[in-house]
Figure: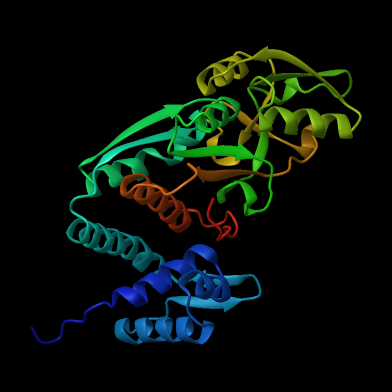
Length: 300
């Protein structure tokens, strides 16, 4: 039909990558293209649509109104494209994949990712276990998981691939729970939880005395204790629920360093199903994680 414009998948993929990473150079590296090629892709896409989609500024890249509109649809077009290609190229991918993940991360970031994976690979059966990172790592070393996501201190790719960076904040039912002097009541997970370590180290570095008043192995238990006013806790910024307040410098609390979520795969050659899940999680978090920094390119 005359007058129709067909959108090129390669151009859309470059546009989405730039929008997510906020930088032409990093997008080019991720796409294994030169920066000039990626820039040309954007120009061709803008020419095809007759609109300016991106503007460069001192802080990186900013989407125009038309760019924001396209981004939502471009993600869906790429998802459908990748799903169709996967279903046709590898219709026989099947088997069981054992995935371990921290409860809070699974609750917030993984449901949609895993649902889309299950739809793309209907013959793959997922067995998902949520637990503390320490327990996940112990069971992973025992061979009980094919793929595991764990919280860790920021580090290089020697132990897994960093797929997410988590900015942490203090959270409490009420700012009045934070004493200006004396002991600071904390609701935390058992040792050696990374969030617990962050809280204790940050307070002690400021000369404050932390006091663990409630220990819970579950996210729901932690949130319930904090809502009840037993103490304050540390949570990823995106996961502070309604009813809790984000606290910080005005309450005299020190800044918290970020943590990471890393993906590790079982040693040896992975089967098709576990390999596809690992790739799917990395790709999904990569395209959905703008504002969380660059990701390590090395595999586990």
